[in-house]
Image (cartoon, rainbow, N blue to C red; front, side):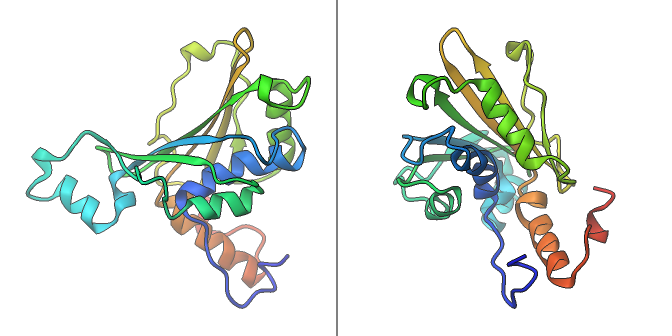
Length: 214
């Protein structure tokens, strides 16, 4: 409603799109404390670096481009304040971004220790909260809670060319570990798709025409 009535709208960054989508519902429901000591890992295709990344991986020097590189090691990535504010965190998370030697697509993961969450919170509750928040959303899907998480794989490129956002919860109850994950196209849902959705709201359309087939 606020976007629909606004004259100016800023679109979310690609990494915050995944991080906030995972964290905000869980913090709102009191399942994850706002002061939880979060560490967020994310790997993006090199197009996330802009023209410099494309030139390095597709230009004359492409043969020497690194297959994988972690950056933001000063721990002050520009998207950290955005994640903190819009997820409702009281403290800044540790954010560890990286680029892979592929053009586009993101896998973002957040590990949780159940022992640090409020008493009796389970992976099933975390999963149910995400399902409830995004029920009926045309571009956000929550994967079933996997019976055999060891057999699962996350492909950062699986949603390339679409406006889809795929959220997952993986758990190992024996060790009280949970992994939250988001997969999406950094150039789609993480950029152009968000812009089109915001324009759609401002123009009073229910489903963006450009995105219906995505």
